[in-house]
Image (cartoon, rainbow, N blue to C red; front, side, top):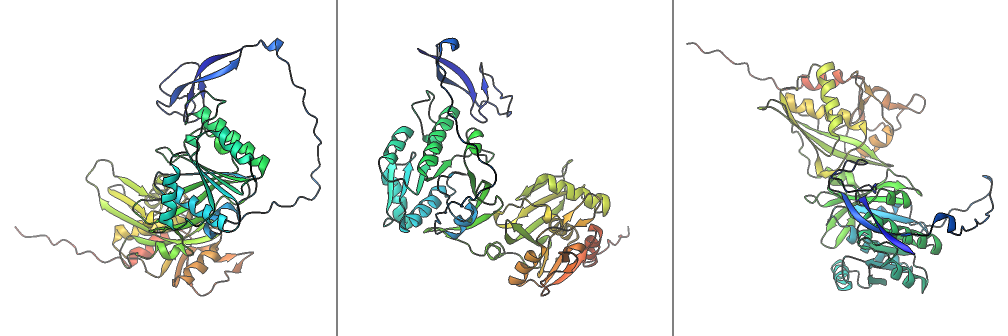
Length: 473
């Protein structure tokens, strides 16, 4: 006979406790522990019948294994992030802020795949079928043969799918609304999310269908629910963007079948999400040419070079502690660059507020942006405008040296494509592949070995400030 026991589970990380407490010792979250009921078998362990294990064959490392054929969605940016298409039997978890466009993107992907002759099923646990049809009508996708359903019980969903041909793609929006009869807790709890995801993953592996699970995100941008769900799935995709800007970025945080550093760029329009083939042109479309404190950074996102504008504003502070405001970059990285500027180059910023922004809402994660950030900071402090036709990239060490970064030829090639004629790069960056010159010679390169050289070049072009004339009297 089964008896019910209660346990207290953290809804953020899945840690289990015997009693309620305000703070989770595992992840440090407050007020995230909730009581959940679980049914356990009251039969003594000695009286339980053990099942004999099944003997399975072992194989060696040698052998031929054919790569599973991928189902290309037809949206180039989506296929790029997934590694070339959807792998049969794979499970993807997509997260993003509310209203960022997750359902819109998945509806467009489902319609594109269905128009290609594949069976696609869209299961919504948050909206009724009529609401999903309204979105499809707004996007002009009502003619696509996508099968819809509004259901939250996982057993019913699996039974319905097993009664017919296995779909190529199954979209579940969202995993937090699903529930299973094997768990007694409420939908959205850690137990329900884990159990529901496990049943759907088991179906995907058995039937060979690609399953996309939509997940909610917390206030800090993390996908809600237990972290174990991210380990269970094959890929974790993050749909990012700023509501004040029209573009969205699809980023792969985990991918067992492809790279984890690729991005897909979309633009939100009245007819849905449109692909952006050249994101650099979009990010630099409204940049301020000739204004002090702006620098163009040539970065890399996966195999794609991206040029973005970095804006800096340095002003005298009226506070006891200067303010450091960063949007789109790492705050700790900015503190390091400011410390190197003051310790190695003599640039005094301790009495100034520093505001740093990556234009367009783009987020930079690689350290190659150090040189562009430093150039923008010094330009804003001195009032000297940087050349409008120059790009910057390079990593700054704590000694003040500028270190080379990877993929320098690809960065320079992208700069030439967008009309830039100058590049400020680390000294060894132009000599890659065993000391040979960079293949692209259509751009003039200014090589700097230390941060002091860059500061001296910018200060030499700074406008001279008038000296205060003492008044008599």
